[in-house]
Length: 437
Image (cartoon, rainbow, N blue to C red):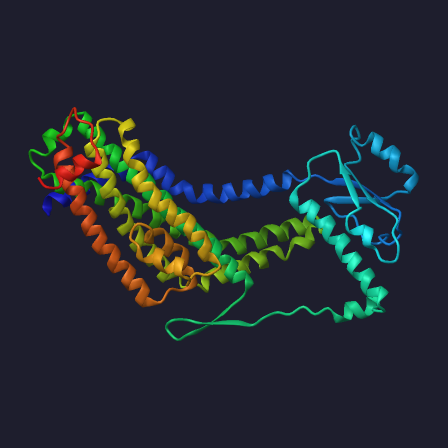
C-alpha cells in the first residue's frame, strides 16, 4: 500500500508542477467562455441581408411579407418578372424572386405552383420561413372564404402556458418549465461529453506513459523495488487525482463566473445605453442571462457535482486499467490501434446512445445504459440533471465498483507479464494465457 501511495504521489506532483498544467487549468474556463463568444460572433457575422422581389399575380399576398434585418421584401409588378429573371444570376442587389401566379377562388394551384428563384444557396430555415408565411396566408384565405374574418381568427388564438410540476423519487414536488428543461439538456450534454473526453484523454496518457517506460527499459529498474500491480495502480491513481484537481478548479471558476456575470453585464450595458440611447433595447439581456443562471442554481448542484466526480473517478480507473494493460502489452503506438477500439467503442455507444434519453431520461435505454459499467460513466451524466431515483444511483455505483475491481484484476495480470515482454506481438489469445500466470 505504501508503494502505491509513493507512486501516486510522484505521478501527481510531477504533473501539477508543470507550467503547462497550471496554465491550462487556469485558462480553460476563460477559453471556454471565449470559444462560446466566438461561435456566437461567427454565427452573427455569417448572416447577410437577403433582398427578395415578390411578384404577386394573385393579389392575395400584398401584406404577407414584411422586411426585417435579415430579409428585405419588395413587391414588383408582373411586367418586371422576366427582366429580373434574366439578370438574377449576375445581380449584386437582388438575391431571390418569389413568383405567386394567378389563382381562382379554390386556391388549389397555389399549393404547388409558387416558384422561388435564387442566385445563392439557401439555408433550411430560409426556405421553411417563406413556406410557413405562404401556408399561413392560404389557411387564412380558406377560413375567410368560409365566413371567418381576420378579427375573429385573431381573437380565437390563445397562448397557453403550462404550470408543470414533477413528482421526484423522494416524494418532493418540483416546478419546471421549457427553459429549465432546455438547460438540463445542455448541462447534461456538457457533463456527458466532458466525462467521455477526459476519460479517453487521461486514459491514453496512462497508456503512453507505460509504453514509454517499457521502451526505455526504465520499468525494469523500477519493478526491482516496486511490484508491478503497485506501479500500475500508482500511475492510474496519480493521473486520476490530476484530472480531479483540474475539474475541481474549473468548476469553482465557472460557478464564480456565473455568479458575477449578470452584474458585469448589467453595468456594461448601462454604460453603453448612457452613451448610445439606441442601445437601450438590449437592457433586458442581463435579466435574461440572470434568469438562466438562476434556473441552473435551482438544480441540485451539490448532488450533480458529487455524482460527476464519483463516476469520473470510477470510470477513469475502469478504462485506465484497460489502457495500462494495452501499454504494457505492445511495443509501439501502431500496435495499440488493434486494442484501442475495444475501449473506445463502449464509450461512444454510451455517448450517442444517451442522445435519445434527453427526451425520455427514465426510459429503458437510459436505465440499462446506466447499469452497464462500460456505458454508465457517461450515461448517468446525461440523466443526473433530470433526477435519478436513489436506488438506481446506488445500484449503478455498486455495479461499477465491482466492475472496477474485476477490471483492475484483469489489467494487473496482463500488466505483470506484458511489461517485461519484448519481441512478441500481443493478441487476445495471448492475453488469455497471461491471465493464468
